[in-house]
Length: 508
Image (cartoon, rainbow, N blue to C red; front, side, top):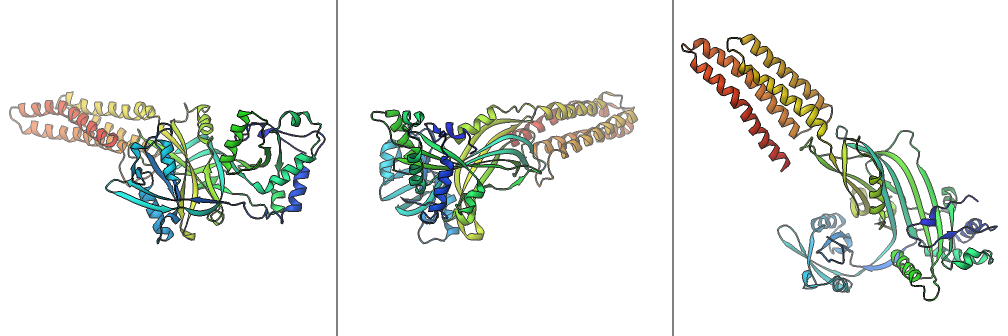
């Protein structure tokens, strides 16, 4: 049977899963799954029953430093006497706000351990700080049924960031991992049938085995898979979507006095919420390429920075009943590495930061909250191209238009020719900018810069005509010459001042 060494370095499995010699462990597994599918009710997701306040709290810094905690997630059922839409609005009112006190105790006087002891009580009262008021929340623990799944969605090869079409292209590597304790007895039975003379098994008591399962096989036994899909996404033309499903069984028993093994086993039990001596994990891996659609704020263009957000959610009909989507604790580190290895020199953008967070969103057709996972990539535009090839040439053209004040006032035709040619050159540069950004309902920094350049280039033409008219009417000619000298210095000075003011308005 086809096998891979894919899980030998699995993030969740600290010890090596093995493949047996002369023993078809995957065939045994599939046969047992077919035989026991109805007995184990494998056609429904495995649900864990937990008691919770419906709250999730995160910290500004590392937990050891115990910076002020923030409310990062609120289940709508947390609020009594409200419908789902009202709860959704209430949730986003307090989300990402500081928790000031818990059960009447100021957060600043608590350690992290003391905070969690208070947080785990059957009833808690939180005071949450918002911009203009403090909100007090009271909650009793409630029972929730869900299947926690861990998602690691990594964006690689982020290319084609287009502010013209409000989109960016990326290669998505997605891993969805969850535990199913119902399969544990089958895993144990397969291990017991394995050859006892296998030295690897004898030497490594934590050994397990892994199998690559086909989508067709799991469909035949109606085993549900959590379908995590990207939002606002379009698959690339002719793009393939590779998919693999891997089952891994691991024995969590440890040899006496093996502290490292015990630490790993306890970590896995806590991660997946299991308490037994074995662990059955399913991992769904997918890779695909396509385009995410984003809304860019281009007011600071070409000195703009953006957060590229790729959101992933579950099939809404399943998500509201079964799945609780959680981020893979290793997802940020592994995703950030993808950008360390990525050369952005010729992309036109600099990658600044990378973050992964979990939250919920409101799905209006079903009037329910659904879990989402968001991957954020912070990028800054490499503005040197626009400064050197657009803004600097515009300044040179503008300087040439002001040079007409150094030509003899009597040379009206020459002065007007230079001014008009410079104005037409500025208009040509405007077409270059139009090809970079969409038609917007607001002005950008570049728009203001070009508009000021238009105005001051036009000012030189109007001033030239006015000066010549005044000279023809001025008997002594000194007033026209004085006005010409004032215009030669006032134009650049006023332009520089207006540019600095507009730049400060947009960038500060």
